[in-house]
Image (cartoon, rainbow, N blue to C red; front, side, top):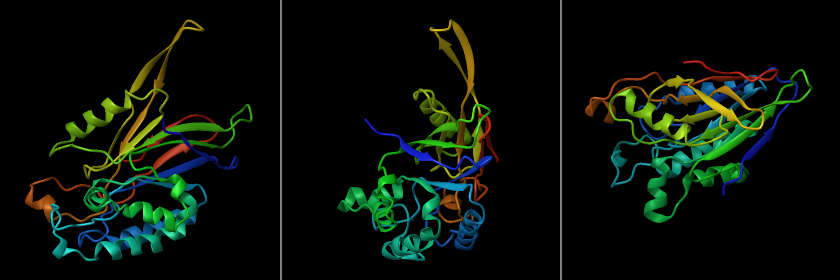
Length: 257
């Protein structure tokens, strides 16, 4: 079975700001690279800002894909080179690296793993998982002097269709199949949404029934509207960062949408 990726962070952090980074699609002409580069500077500006990398970082268009390889701003080789260069500045803020379906095109066709190559170049191959990642993050200081711990599931995601309901159903169905998870993050559907349902927890040892909040987040993409989305009559969506704030002196999770 898969092991947790464990990050024991500073007890001096009152809060931790978590930013899912996915659906960047470097190579696509519609990707806002200036916004992305500004985001990297934003992450570096404060020590309590971290990212999870969750796929489709490269558009990786091939001749057999929906994306048109002849319309790319950068070739797949150049996309990988660009990511290695840009992500180097925040390599100490990356909590996990998970590929998406655009990277999987190369894996399926020729056994090439482009996002693993980026992780390896950054000496972060231990944070790479080809399917998804489960993370444990501890930081801050509670009244009992112990750190506050959060468990986070990071997947690229799938499905969704033209309307939001399909994406919400997918993420909530999966969320309830994983016991002990505080947060589940996905993308893929190029929307920006969040929800915080509750679960009843039965404790037979103490004969109690308690309630636990769980947070799901669908993170925003980084493209301007047009191209495939326009041709397919998909709705425009907000682009850029999707902040998630975690508290260190007590357990509380807030997604800023």
